[in-house]
Length: 457
Ligand code: FAD
Image (cartoon, rainbow, N blue to C red; front, top):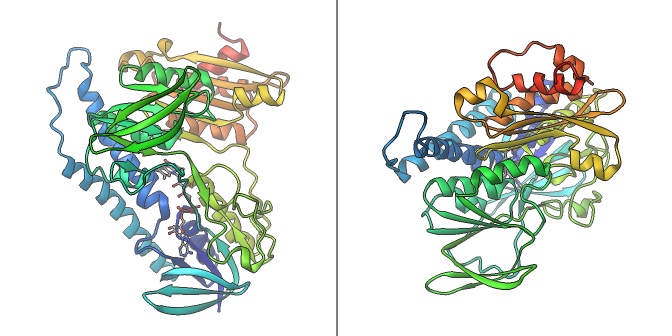
């Protein structure tokens, strides 16, 4: 009998299992794949960043830089694939060692709840029953499929197959302008593909403020075509091409491309693994419903990560994992973040945290913004990265920082300070009075705060 069984070994699952083991519980973790780490480590966050690292090198070599010109990059796809895979292998094998070091029993196989105190794990025709006092559902999410897409055609990619870099198409249509689609578009563009992004909504990177997204679009307008308010209604596969039918304000048209990456979002795995059958309450889309302690409608069963409401992000999953494990160990803790950072690791990066200007306007929250343009930053000018800005969103009356958005080179790295500022209830004055190193990009946070507070004009 285990104190805790965790179903799924993604960033939510392993964070929960490890924290619970550290707190002295007897823990088992079940994973259907042969490696631990879930989507994030195997086919998500980590391999995509390994490829974006390489894409960044190619992009640098592509652009003449103040007296330094590179010859055309010599691209070795095998070596790039090797870098991606060895990064994944290092991290997933470290996880296995960490599980072993903590005496977490790992079961590889398909898990299915049998009751509110047992799970059956199936592997290669054999079955094993595992009894538990508590369980954490950490089964993640999967890519949404569209009915008209001919998925059996090898020219149709999803995020997982796109990461394999089987071949670089001449013209890639990315269906969906979210973070995952745009990161993969950035990789394929750097490797030589022509990119068209089709997005149903009125902006790419939904969730980020439009003024930040505009900087990204401007920086990439020679490299990618962005079609917003555009619906893909059908894809016809012929021997020569994939004919993509597009519907926008002007009417219908068709675009012949060599490959299509479908990146239209992800849906939760809550309807699987016997979860509804044991009485765990779900919403109509299959998200498991939880309270602030990550507890489901069944008191000894918790749920975390992509299978629960909130942003589908690895760091949200792992924080929930810690909370659920601590609650099970008897601690009085809640999952109540004020700010969950989002980063698009594109060129330039687009990063935001807390309240956005768009959301504030929609909710009628009285806010003001303070924006520092990177064209006035010494570090940005010296580094040739002036396409960027740092924006603070703050309460009009108290000047408390409620949100922030940054676009520019390494923008995501600036979110550390900004997330802390929001969680600590910092005001513009707090940020303005904090000494920021000169010249640095994070200095733009202090300068934006000084602009908002009126200490500089
Ligand atoms: P998952 O990581 O999905 O793990 C769930 C695990 O449960 C899987 O290993 C699955 O095999 C296992 N499982 C499911 N059902 C069963 C069963 N019945 N029996 C046994 N095992 C089962 N997020 C970020 O924060 N930053 C990024 O940069 C980022 N980049 C991404 C890039 C891509 C291409 C993709 C696809 C996603 C990216 N994400 C990123 C999202 C991130 O991967 C997810 O938010 C995160 O993995 C969710 O963690 P999780 O623990 O909830 O679930």
